[in-house]
Image (cartoon, rainbow, N blue to C red):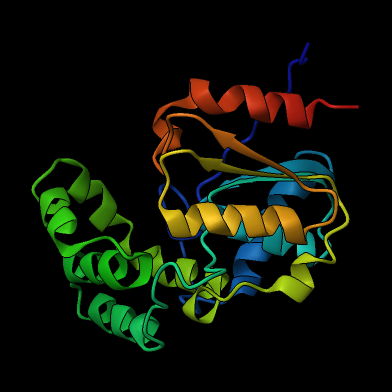
Length: 222
């Protein structure tokens, strides 16, 4: 039976209550932020990340931060040809729209061309209350693209050097490309545990009861 654990959630750079005075949009800044959080809670930690946050968690493990275990849900690399690669100039175009103050345009561009959301779905999102929240995060989108790498490249050689226990999770209803990436991560990271959660898609953070059992089992394992 899983025991209790302390969970610490922080706002990534440029989101929520976390500011961003540098606007350098480099991965090293986000790695340093995570390292500071780990130091604050005692010097070592297990780390979980969702989507691009999952890529950040894996990047931190690859860079040797004091991480005992790492778990990710639908980390956004592309590992096969089940979706097109985003154009190489998307980060520059998103930054240009942010510089103009066009957060709606930057968010729509990111979703359609970087994430691969169909334009009609983005139009529906723009008409929903959630859009104001998403648009408010636009200034931080270049960090997502920086940490995920050029065209969401799958860094197989570096991933294969991760030595800490790893849990790779995807939703049964997730996009084919992201489920394929989860399977590839499970094959690439040594001794990784790959799981699929039935009935879930990329929005699992809105269904925490579906995710919590897997995370508790993993982070409290001997």
